[in-house]
Image 1 (cartoon, rainbow, N blue to C red):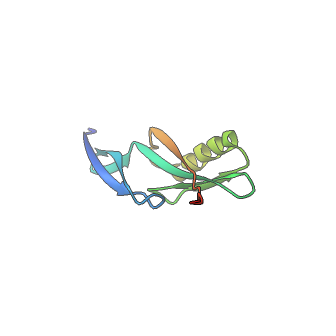
Image 2: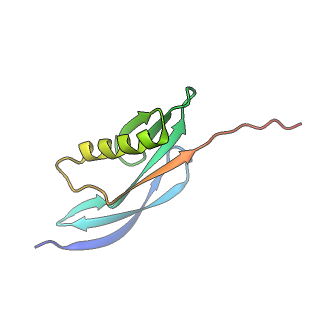
Amino acid sequence: MITSRVAFDTIKSRATHSARDLLLVEVNGRIWAMEIVFSVYQDSDGGFVAECLSYDIFSQADSWDELRSNVQEAVTGYFFDQTKPERIRLHLVRDEVLACA
């Protein structure tokens, strides 16, 4: 028999140091993340680097479309023997420094 209970938890984003809500579900005593968040940066060569904020999952690609595919493949590989999250959120982080004239 599978029992489920929905709970909310808060994780800290290493990229922005702000709280993010993560929906968690408990199934048979185990907690599963229903959505995982990747912080995405544009590399100096124009490519993209993605880092998952809640698991040790990393990926990179030369284009946004390629990154989407690579992240899905990395998540599938990481959760190969577990229940996969329902959603993957890619959060593009852009850091810009402006001069005060």
